[in-house]
Length: 209
Ligand SMILES: [Ca+2]
Image (tube, rainbow, N blue to C red):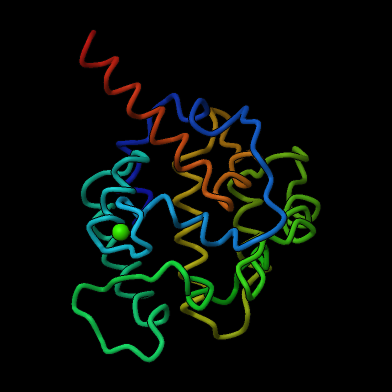
């Protein structure tokens, strides 16, 4: 589903968004929080569905996909990040507790405290990037997802599948490769900022053209 929704918005210049970045590598602190902080538009530590929606729009996703993502993510994660608090129909996600919303069948690149585990990150490419050591093909990505699956963890399977496939669609280059730098930038959140800036630039160029 994600592919059919996102495809019309995936521009031919995707590789410009995602590659050739000299990223600052964070080895300490809660990198998982940095990963999601982009979506907290007003920096109040809470992500509401409309902020998730705007974040997805800013990185180039269509209205329908952004709506589905916002509902899916906020409804799925809100309660997990608000331990001891009553249910809220506004589905807020509290960033300080985001590590509590980690799902199973993932790559283990975030540990239980939300820290970045470089060895697990390197393992993804050591094990699965066979045709090109610093990038994944679509088939290699499918292999990665299958090998991460924990038995009967269907929610984790779906969450991982959705995240990785969306990333692939948005960031693959013209040869269908998902580059290591782009994946690293997703883990620490820096890629989202760059994609949003690139998109802003492209839109203003279009207007002035
Ligand atoms: Ca907010």
